[in-house]
Length: 170
Image (cartoon, rainbow, N blue to C red):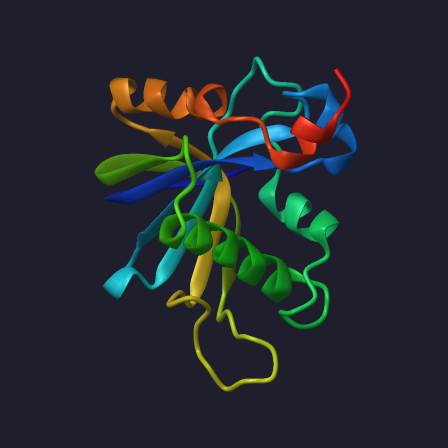
């Protein structure tokens, strides 16, 4: 059973193509991810899929997505590498915004936590955090404001075709 957590913070919402093999079957293999932070000085990353029942596999488990990605720069396969990769995913979306993504300065959110990884540490260093986070919580996220939630659910619709989709024959 998932435990819950909530907070109010800056939230970055972005589309994620999580199944490359289904690229040509748009919108299959896509989901919407929200990134926030909580805890003292934002030391805990929060990443959650915003469930979309209208999408085929629109609510994947993010740790499974990270495992399929096989991140290589964060140490041996396992929770630290997957949690570090997900933290990078959210942080990167925030610092390099893309057209169609949604950035909210302050929003209340609730996360159904599927997994928490503590003591994130980059491979080969003595650093005590990854992108400023020592912990990452992953699961399914909901914005408590219905109007903001409706905006978040539209992120896929406002995102243009990727370069790969543009190369696909009509």
